[in-house]
Length: 439
Image (cartoon, rainbow, N blue to C red; front, side, top):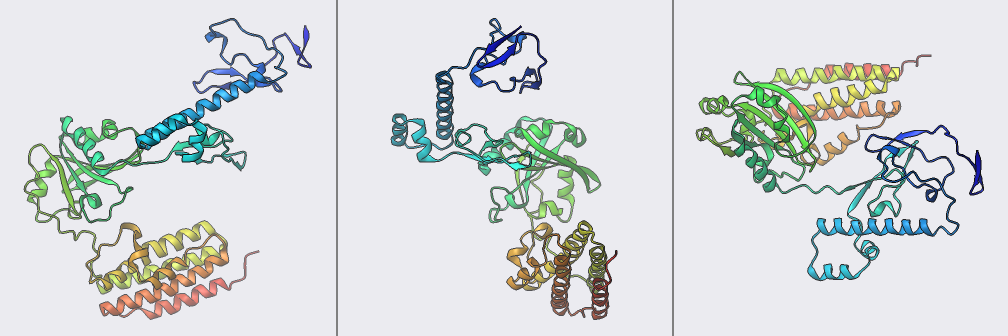
């Protein structure tokens, strides 16, 4: 049987329906194509309905019901916006009293949203943010997340120590690296490098309680190594509040071993601060010298070997460029030639200006501020996109910079920069570039 409904014919028989998953994982029927919102009475599956199934009815000609629901939802979103904003940024009493007399929309317009919209790509397009989304909703594929506000260092350390105090297996906690030194220039995104000495390191590291001791983990990664013949475990965790803690789990026997050694291990010599020591086993440790990771002067053999390594790497760059293998080109040029070989020469160049007493950042961090300005500008010009011709030019800018830096370092150390390998390989690179292209 078919009846007329809102100008359309609708069957009362059981027509096949599509189904989608709800947020809770239950399947729900989709709204038949062409239906308006006011025609739908319930999305709930029949098994959870608390009242008789209601049939579709013709749409309201005036649209008053739809308008009322839209206004109600908008008012709720604006009210929630104000609640979140007041919780996030405490306001003076006078301003709070004024807000209580103003409408939520007026407050939203005057103070600005406490959210950051992150666009999600959908069907090849980047969704934008509309007015409904800016008040805490989700529209057009955009997702609103509260802006990241990281907790104060003192609060983080207090939570970590409180966890260590209540955990019977934890015997000591030692903060190391940048946050252990008051004048290190640590910023809000600096890691918390924490040594956790425990009775059974292997068992402790395998237990998820380590990751969740501070808070709810967002992502984590682990590894292991050795110190004085004993296995240690690295467990890095980023938490939902944005805090990153790099745990190094020690067997507690290492606490005495460090006391007995003539020098501190590098992880402690960069700087440390004992946060917790239940058994007073760190009292015999030496103070840090802060000399760890400062490059030593290379021997002449080490200097020449690194020169050869750089020029060897450049031949692979030329070969891959001629073949049009851009990904391998970027690996050999930006990583092997520059990051592995030339970076060490750049660090040596920095030490020449600082009497071999400055610790450069790990993996090239801080080169922008430590290198002479003109050298940094030359280095920056060697980083280009994926165009083959651009990378040929970048290769020769890289070799020119290397030639300059290697010569300056060699002169400071009294070593002659090997000119023959420079001349021969440069001619080889130019020859490969001029080869006829493969058909």
